[in-house]
Image (cartoon, rainbow, N blue to C red; front, side, top):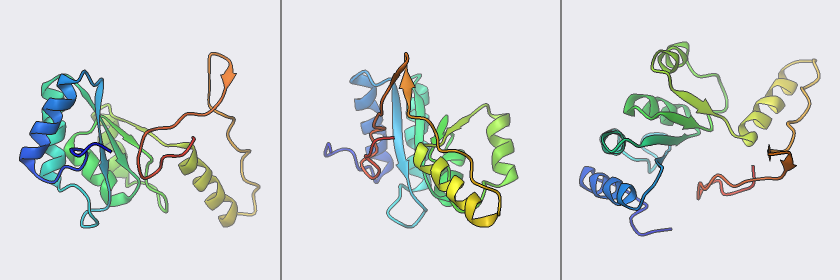
Length: 153
């Protein structure tokens, strides 16, 4: 992991965003966790998003917990990956995403977790598992690059 991958201050956020843009990144990905658990602070997340948007770059936020999901929304992230497990996102959060034309991209692990939860809560059989990821007719797997979740999806 690059030494500048962990950003703790607004000044670092500005510098790292500028470096990623200069390197030719297509987008900036930020990893958010529940606030208070080693996560970026809200002001640092907002700075990363503002700097990326100023350079015309999209921001993808890894947010697997409800607090992180709310932080991603508040910071202005364009895409939120993983969606929280446990309970659905609040109706207000879903409405804000639709209003602002933002998207979420749950990973296979999240979808499978939801499937297992559904099966445990009802007597209805769980839906069939997902088919493998494919592109151009070739089935396979891909890695999404998150150091915490670096596994094939």
